[in-house]
Length: 344
Image 1 (tube, rainbow, N blue to C red):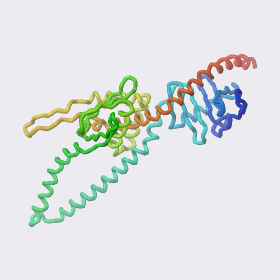
Image 2: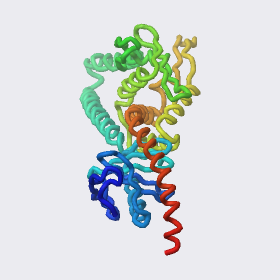
Image 3: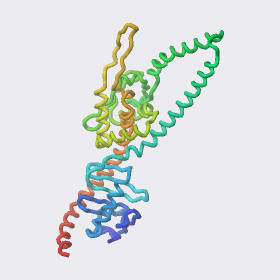
Image 4: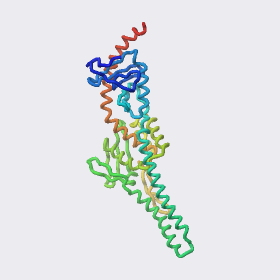
């Protein structure tokens, strides 16, 4: 086992995570081919480890990598940072994105508990008021004073439902940098589309008209609106279901596309319907705020992940180029050494 770089002859450093191979702070491994490299912190060249020392170490790297709930992956390269600072670079097919529930579960559960707490306080106050009214004699002269507010309150519920449609959900940044106010009613007439290249398009209706947002603008606007729509969070089962949706889709971008298709399938135009008791407007089942909670939570998770993934793509692309060069050398080196090992 060596401790210095084969190229620049500087120290490779050490790690406390891989007991069978304590050399190096950045280890790259390919479990399928049995390769293990130490990446030099000085020249960033990949040093292929001796073939007789790598098998147990590769198994340890794979086990530790799979145990990390926070990791970044492309089609061929994965990156994970261990708690003590060692970086593991995994070569091979990407693993299922099981990090979503871990990263966002706590956030959504806190929102959920906060919402439940607010509902309990509100319900307690309402129950106290009802009990006080119940203690009064309806047959007394106070009856009109008691009944009239109750009747008015019942009528107010209808007005409150209508008023909630015009409540501002959030303010998002428009194509030219201006702030756009978006209400629940606006969302009935808005939709988002996931394009084939992975980019997003948001056809947004707002208080000042209509605007089409694309790319980063659409991603940020959707993230802002979802944070408000998902303010109630979710129970553990809902959060787990949302994480499973992302995992089953394959990756966050595929999950966004899947949810966009489901929203499109559910979409129906808002129209006025005439009935005997009056007119009313239908709702759009494909509107962002009318999607199932599982879909909304999964969409918020996925949008955050794609934003962070974009920042990591350059680093992963650089690692993939370096791996391809190192793999060519490793294939030759291992091909030469294998017959010699077989003789012994």
